[in-house]
Amino acid sequence: MTTADTMTNNTGFDLLVVGAGASGASVAYEAVRRGLRVALLEASDIGGGTSCRSTKLLHGGVRYLELAFKTADTAQLRLVREALLERGHWLQQAPFLAHRLELALPTDHWFSQAYYRIGLGLYDALAGRSGIGSSRLLSARQLHEALPQIRAQSSGGVAYSDGQFDDARLNLLLALTAERAGAVVRTGCQVTALERNSQGRITGALSCSSSGEEERWTARVVVNATGIQADAIRHMADPDLPPRMLTSRGMHLVLETNLCPQGLGLLLPATDDGRVLFMLPFLGRTLVGTTDTPCPLEEAQAPSGDETAYLLDYVQRWFPGLQEPRVSSRWAGGRPLLRPADASRSSSRVVREHEVETLACGLVSVMGGKWTTCRPMALDTLAAVEQQLGEPLPAANTLPLLGAAADPTRTPQRLSEQRQQLKELLPDTVLQHHQIDHLQAAHGLEAVPRVSEWPEADREPLSAVMPICRGELRHAIEREHARSVTDVLARRCRLAMVDEQEAQRIRPEVIALLERSRPDQPLSEREGSLNLQH
Image (cartoon, rainbow, N blue to C red; front, top):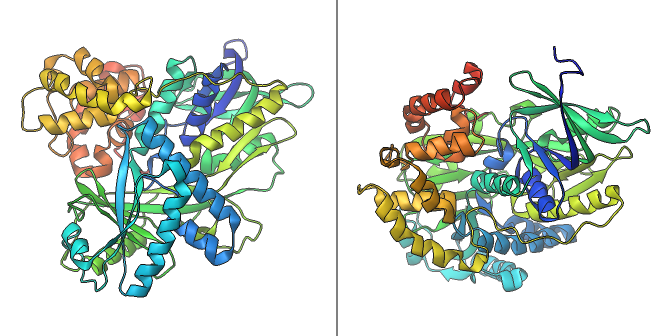
């Protein structure tokens, strides 16, 4: 056992952030912009929990807008407005990771078409200068041209715009950008206890790595950004605290068939149980989701047979010609919902607002929220940190996301200019165009520097489903904190999230690279199973 004399001591931090999901990585990123000395600790992998298991939408939330007016709930309206502004922020800051996506909301008579057209007009208006396109009416012919296999509709529908993004990759780049600016980032690092001074104030934490190494981290402030696990850290600070988190499982399927060949997604506004359902273009296939099932915390990432049947039932209702949809991947994730005052409210009606709690001992916890609003969550968290430090934080420095231009408005043009360089660097195969798209989507303007580092043999695409190459896999292991097969194939690239069978085929290649790059890592952790529940 490690003794106090041999335990590694990590000192001198202003901020210790526990949890490297969307909220934790955003807190670390915004903190280093303000000159704080930051350590970011993650028990598993960066973005390895809920943050890599979203519906991949940057959106205000159409259903929240509808609820706001049906229930006269101004909290819902504020959430929609804030999220629409943030949608615009990420589309501008990371155009290689995020793009505009138009979605169709089908209707079956003129009244519902008018109802949704008015509502979506308000949705557009709430975005203000951050708007990304006006909603429009769709005739029945236009709807069927965009979604050729959809069932017959008499009145067409309404199309509106939101954003689609790579959640795991944005999460990773926030953490890597913070690390490049001076933050210490540690994965496979489980916080086991919080430490206090003689006045009972939290002064840091103890952690244990997967190999059993224990470390002490001291910091002026500790932030709990562990999502659905937030109560566990809160109870380390005070075992008598009432729990605040609800766990609701959201499940997604990926269908091998591309039901959205023109890139127009589908929103079903009213399922039998009151949820909205999406069918979206996803890397040449179709992403279907999401469910909303209250469950124990330990089951939040366990796909359910009943939920699979539920989703496939709606696919076949709306695309009756698709007799036996082939599912190429499935995953589930727990939503970090705050427990409402009325515990009887269903999780589908809980406002996706966030809350920053500061305990008397000084622990700051950021809870709730949604991916789109991770930046306001981080800024509110830093306001609480500022109170704990007892001094104002410095003004934020400019810190472009890794892969973006210093002036983000120039990123699209520079990406276009970079394509010719990539064409000259990559092998001349039938997948070259696809490979350029893939590398730019993952690395942005860093794609050329990355590819230039790899031997020519390591640039050959390994899969027709997703043209990943050996150089990219090695880079993920050596430079992006990937420690396991699932880290590499589910989060550094999305192959396992698109096609689990194809990812299994590539698995031996990844294991070989891990063995060479991490020979001291325990074999069970390095190889592991390719399991989207981890």
